[in-house]
Structure formats: C-alpha cells, structure tokens
Length: 120
Length: 112
Image (cartoon, rainbow over all chains, first blue to last red; front, top):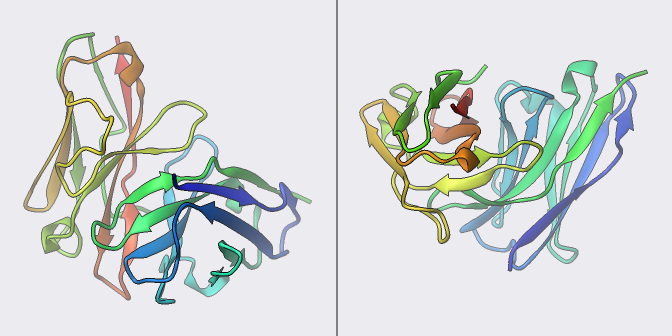
C-alpha cells in the first residue's frame, strides 16, 4: 500500500525559504521507474506542477520556478524534500507530493496536501 | 500559465453524457506524450482517473473514458451522477525547454 504525507510549516514570511518534506511508504525510490513529485494549488485555482525526482536522481523542475526550487531525496528515510526560496504571498497554496511512475508519467498516489500561507 | 487548455466548466443532468477537452500543442500532446486525467472532489487531494490516454486504474467506474487525437485529448463521463460533481484536470509532459510535466487549467463539472 503506497502512502505519502507532506509536512512542513503552515506559515512563512515573505522572502523566507520554504522547506517541505514528503514521507512515503509502500515503495522504494531507488530506480528510474519511480519518482516523487510536488504539485501545488492556490486557493480556488488550478493544479501547478513544481518538481519531480526519480530514483536515479534525475531531477525535473517547472521552467517558471526552476531558479527557486530544489528537490532532494533521502532513500534511507523515505523522504523527499522540496525547498522554495524567496517566498511571496502568491505562493500561498496547498502543496501536494505524489508518486509518479516513469513509464506512464502519471501521478497515481497523492498525499493529503499541506496548506502553506505566506504572510508577514 | 498552463500549456494545456480546458473549458472552465461543463454541466449536465443526471444520466447524461458530458465531455471535457484538453487542448495542447506539438510539444506535449501532439508529440505523442500520454495524457492523464484526475478528479478532485471538494476539499480533497486529486485522484487519478485515467492514465495513458484511456486506461482506468482499478476501482474507477467504466462511466469514465479517455481518448486522444492530434494535439487534444478528451474525458467523457457517461451516465452522469451527482457524485461526479468535481474538478477535473488533464496532465501530460512537455518536451520544450528541459522537459516538464504540466497540468491543464481545470474544468468544473456541475450536475444539474
């Protein structure tokens, strides 16, 4: 059974760096066939893909946010960490992590999401 | 701004058939990358509904079907039910720049 859960601060100040952790179980992130991605959704708005890391350490980033994002994995802890620098109120959103299968490209299992508010 | 365009809303009466379009370009859907569809019920995380253009994960009713042609894809819901009222998103891969995943703009389905 695959599960994922996001954790991190619920409130960050403008210009600060956000660090979110995705803790997963039910699979190993050690082959190219499997990845974990981050997706966000501002209140009332659409989903936006942010970043993805495969088990072979291949990293992919949203072109519009690439300069602010870093995704890493800790296979021993079953963690994937996303950092986003220079946070702004427009970054207020629910942040999801999700399991991705390289063969299909689909995000087939999702965490419950965590709401991050950016405000001074 | 998403490169996959969906209609903001569609509606239908119970039992009717509705379709949602997802329009891309030659660097994503038209480049033969697969399209996937997600259903998001209010206040919940998205759920994979269709993967690989037309495949349903276990447990997804066969009322939901997907198709792809050229630079567009479609999701059809037949025998619309009240529980189908939700937001629906398409997703694919784009080969421009360094390559990236992309979600559609989203469609709200309302059951009249």
